[in-house]
Length: 429
Image (cartoon, rainbow, N blue to C red; front, side, top):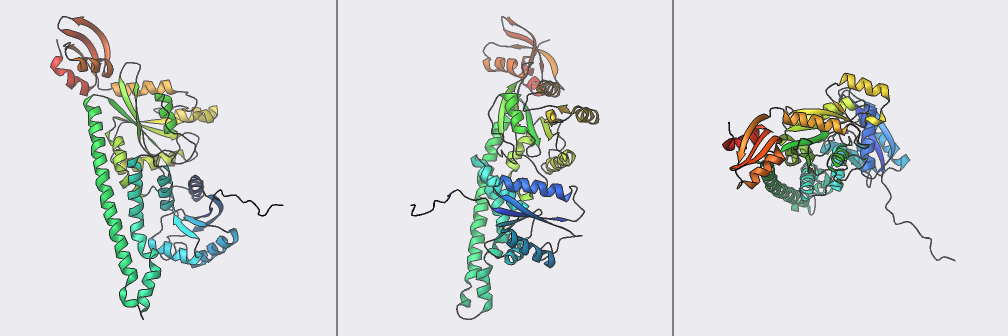
C-alpha cells in the first residue's frame, strides 16, 4: 500500500478572464479584438475561462468599467476560480490598483500592454531583443510603482508611532531612482548596439546590396517566407510573436544580383507606444530598406484591418513612404472564387503560399523588377588588381557581356545607381 499519493509537478496554466469595452471608436469589432486577446493569452500560457463585455461611451476613470460591472467581474472571478483578469485596453495605474483591490490578492489584473510585454519577454532571444523588452517593461512599470507600495504609503499617512520615518515614500523613491538609472543604462547599451547595426547597414549600402524588409501583422507567415526564399531555418511557429529578433539572410536573384532579406517583429493592433519606441533600433532595418514586402494573411477575415494597423506602425517609424509590395500569403487555404476576387481587388499584390512554396517564383520576379528599377547600362574596364571590385561586378550587377582585355575586365552591365557611382571611375565609352 502506497504511503503517499503521487501528484503532478507540472505547472498549471493560469485561468484567465478577458474584459473588453466597446466605445464605438475602434475599427475592430469587440468580439474580434477579444478573440485576438484570447490568442495572446494562450500564447503566454494561460487558458481563457470566461469573458466580460460592456458598452460605454468612454471608460470610467476609477475602474474603467464602472462599479456595477466591477462587482459583476468579482463574482465571475470567484465563480470561475480565475487567477488573472486581462483587459483588452490599457489601464491607468490607478485603475489597475483599484481593480486589484476589488478582486483581492492573489488574483491579478493586467492589461493588453502588460500581456504583450510578457510574451515579448519570453520570446526575445538575442541580447538586443532582451534589452529592448526590458526597457519597455521598466517604462511600463515606473508609473505603477505607487500602487505597488500603497500598503507602506498607507502606514505613513495614518500617523501614530513609527509614521515619522516615511518608510513607504522612501522605498518608493529608492525604487523609482533604481528604475530610472536602469532605463538610462539600457538606453545607452541599445544606442551602442544601434550604432553597430548602423555600421553594418552602411557596409551593405556601400557594397551596393539591395535590401528587402519583411513586415506584417503577427503570424502572417514572414519567418516561413524567409526560410523558403533563402533556405534558412529561422524559428517559425503558428503563434503570435513567434519571433521577435530581426534576422537577415542573403539571396541571389536569377539575374545574378545579390540582395538581403530581413525578417522583423510582427505588428499588432493597439501595439504599446513604449514598445514601438524600445524596438526602434530593430525597426531601423525597415526604415533603411530599399523595398518593403508587406506580408498579409489572406485567409484572415480582418486582413484589411491588419493592413491598416501595420501601415500605422510604419507611419510611426517614418517608413510609410518606402517602396512596398503587398504579399498575400496562405492563399492555398482560399477557395478558387475568393482567390480570384482577391486578385481582382488587389491587382498589384502578389499571391503566394510560403508553406507550400507556391507563387515564390513570381514574388522573386517582382523583387527583381523593383530592384532593377532605375538601373543604368554602362561599360566598365576593371583593372585586374581590383579583385574586390571585379567580384562586386559579378555579384551586384547584371552582366550583359564581358571579356578579358589586356588592361582588365571589360564588361557591359546593368547596375543600380549606387553601383554605377562605385564603377564611375572605370567607365569607358
